[in-house]
Image 1 (tube, rainbow, N blue to C red):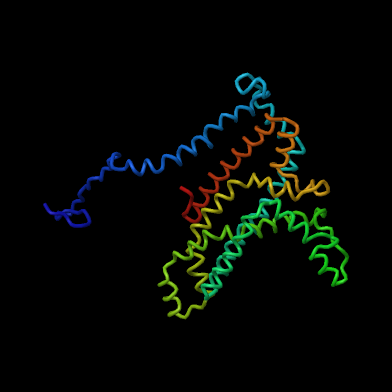
Image 2 (image 1 turned 45 degrees about the vertical axis):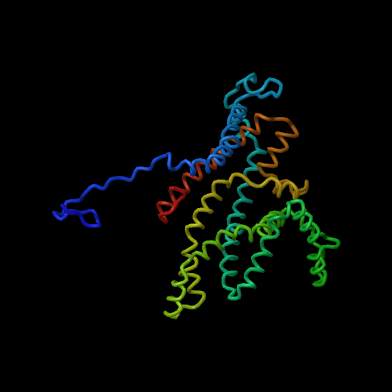
Length: 317
């Protein structure tokens, strides 16, 4: 009995193909290559998880994890009924929402616009310049923004003075502070975050653009119907990862830019945990906050992934 290339016999009956068996011995080099990465993940990500036990104890550094008294969900119940915690939770979600709307979309727009430059030299210069702020620490970035927005010698207020507008105290204005924080994050990370989008755009088949040009499509239509759809899988991937961290926000950015006058709108979970955990030595309380924060982020990631697969047919797994 002969079979065709599709695996169907001459009689029309399907023929079972033998699965190719992979001998682990022949893949030893690949296992050896990935072993250091797996070891690092296990040592630095999984072994420290035993510290979660502290959230269910009245932890004492002198007694250790095994010697401290177990109190169950005491600390979780405490911060869930604490007004201060809900204030910092609200601030965290608001700032993350602004970051999601502006900080997440800015690299996409930047990559699309930068791709429209026909001259490769100009495109490379723009990309290189946009990467530079990523390598500055938040202390430096904070100093730059404080200097630019200074009411006495800042360049922004100098320009406002030319328009006969009184100096604005940007860094102590509660209504403006969140916008400044989000803007600083966009300025610092927009170029670096766009690297993956540049890589995706470079991998799009150029024949699609050639066919579109023959059909009379301009640059805008090519961007909308070819470039942007090609970026969608990467956008979905990064969006899901961003959603998983919506209950967390970078400590350094808020810590170096906030001041007592704007604490009501700038105090987030990470800065609250710093004060309560390190300055006030409430280790169990802050560990419980981190534990709940991680659980909420994990549940949000699972939910968002299922919705993504249902609505657009793509997800993390």
